[in-house]
Length: 295
Image (cartoon, rainbow, N blue to C red; front, side, top):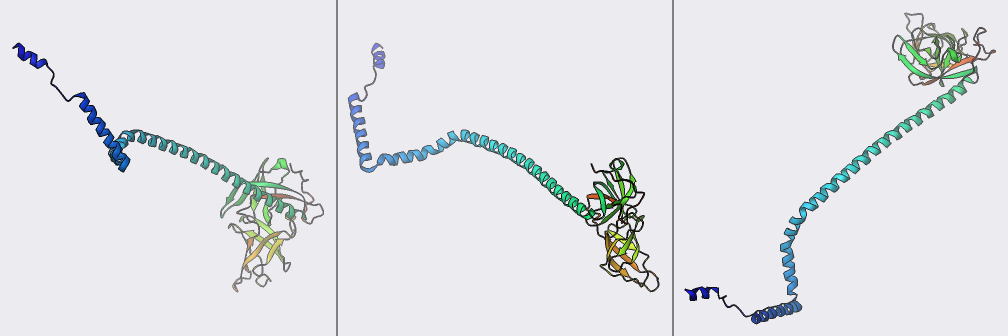
């Protein structure tokens, strides 16, 4: 029994250490010689890299995916902020462009008013249109001038291209203007080519007048210019009113059916002018109120 136990405690005899060293040294020298002669280790390294690459990608994928996701969201947020800033800037530039175009149009209209009123008016006052009412029953403007600016009822109103109408209801700071096209309005006119006088009545249609009191044999044709005659001492003499657009003669009626197109752009005018006539002008009324100095 004792011999058996002792034999179990004796470690088995293995390969001597010197032999193992000799084997390992020989193997190392052989590998070095093969690598120096034929690049054998490069082939081995290449194969090991091919095997290790999937493992490297698997280990690096979570970090790479996180970095890609984070960068993608950061870039998206930055792009959204830049887009919002660009849209806001674009809106600002559009507003500035519209405002500049508006000022240019207004300056052009003011220059046109000044040149148009020079020959007939002692003074004139520009007014901005703040409300428009155009239908078959009423053709009216409301402007931002009133009695505090010296405006009076019945005062002539012009635009750059021609006559607009006259003041109807005057308030402290605003005035309602009845336009030429209003069915309740009439203006004494004269055919510029022949000198024949008549009345032009509003039709209720924007930009259109009717001349219902011309005899059938009147010398009038399409394209004839109509100007103010100065009768009634409300409107200046010789100011453009419209041009004849149609002439119809029916033998069953003693009067010609004549329509005219208003010269002023009643659907587009935004600035008009009130006139105070020169004392010597034929349209100046001796009872007209004194002109007020434009503010």
